[in-house]
Image (cartoon, rainbow, N blue to C red; front, top):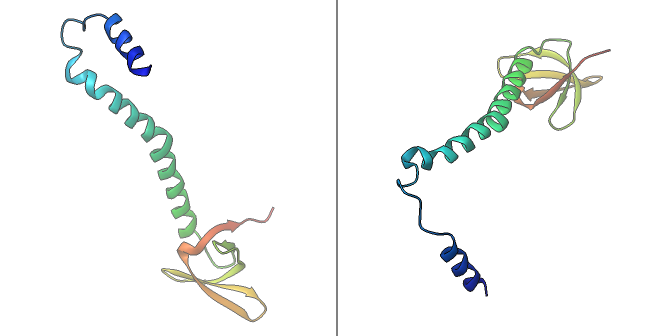
Length: 108
């Protein structure tokens, strides 16, 4: 049934248009449009989020309250090049990689 329907559609559609279609521009235009949409809706916003996260991590300083990606809440006591030393509780300090900092908590 489906093949008969497809055959009738093919026969009723008529001959192909003269001139060959649209050439190379007609072939690549849909791919170009998909790439542009992909760039503006996925790549560009992700890049902006990554840049703001890098800026936040570089701005961490002593005394800031942080939350790690594991959910640990702590106060920064020392900042090194690649890590932070954070006080979790009285006499409990943990060293975290800077990339483990999920957010800096601000007091309102």
